[in-house]
Image 1 (cartoon, rainbow, N blue to C red):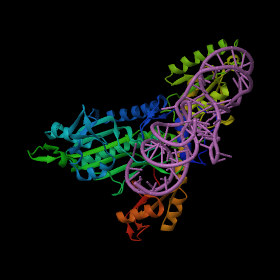
Image 2: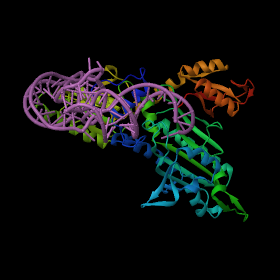
Image 3: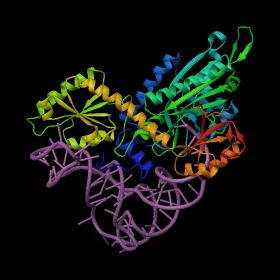
Length: 480
RNA sequence: CGGGGCGUGGCGCAGCCCGGUAGCGCGCACGGUUUGGGUCCGUGAGGUCCCCGGUUCGAAUCCGGGCGCCCCGACCA
């Protein structure tokens, strides 16, 4: 790791992002174009995300299962819009076992089709419904341009797939899962998100409706951070997912799917990070607390380390993830910078003076310098840390929320919208345009409709593009 | 697929124009020094100079061809 400072966010945000990802040791380049190696520190963040979501899925009655990586090519083609949406980015296996396959196998870009096929076997009766399944998996989408975590050719995610007896139940499920994503984002990742519905253009290939949570990154670009789709009966009809109702009549199921990916790791980096590196929300931080021992000469070392070891077990026993930096070659100053780069929420410094005074220095990552430092007694340090971690979690959320709200503007005129978007902000405007109008906006301003927020101002207005009366407002932004 | 750039120890680069012992910074190993905000000094390990062909006594350098990667655009979780 180089010891030079990273590129400032203000200077070149995307360069900043790449440097942070590699220098904070989240990921490493892979031999295959568009793929990355997720290193342990990055993977632990993902594990935190998995844990937070999985708990919520289970609590709402979902079960995990696993479906094959390979999908017969013909499956993908069964739902018309689905093929059209995914064909360009499929990786296809044509040979295996030294022979050409009779039917090529697609490496799954998503699993609606295989799971739909399975569901049609599993579901016979209304008594089998609802069927609530989730899988943790890798998927492949051969994207033209990739960036670590934000868009890679292969990525990790969870995809939920459910089947229901009625449209309303499916809709309820779709919205419930969006709520779960939003709750996770806000509570665990400290990322404020806006819930809303996607426009027709941005809808999932084959869905009736797509809902999204949208987050604002530190460069003010929007990141779609999780989506939930009401698939209607489209996949049920393509894969013959039917059930026998109470009245002894056959009916097609109503299905949903919803996913959240390793992109969320990128969201955490870009929502909270600053020029010193990552700032991890305590709930997702692999290490919530790092202890840096400080000693001048070898004779001080045993004394300091004795205290450090004692505090380590004391803090760990309180359920706080703590790490002691026992590296010999580096100075404390180096370690301070290193852990700031890696975004550890709280640093504990223990030196000879602290040993003598039964003290410890706590330094918080979200407030750098003297202002963020405090001296506490070693007795009950775990309580002080607990409180501090909570405060940091809350502060990161508040910080991100304030930043976001500062950069969303209501606009009435098209020129105004163009201005806002050019300045990097998000524009909220009345909309009743067509697909063509939406495309035109993208061409002319670079912004897309991120969503029609659930939270609407009420009343009606005039479309920012067509000038016609409009029923709802849309959120426009440049997106990742 | 259009437009630009680049391939030289693990990483970042210089050398190429004008052919002649392959260099620098970081990192790594060892020894010492230092340690409360990125210590300093010394010693050392580490290279098919992207690949193939050509010119030449001699090619990282010149010529021809190929491959790969990065950035910008269109596509996208």
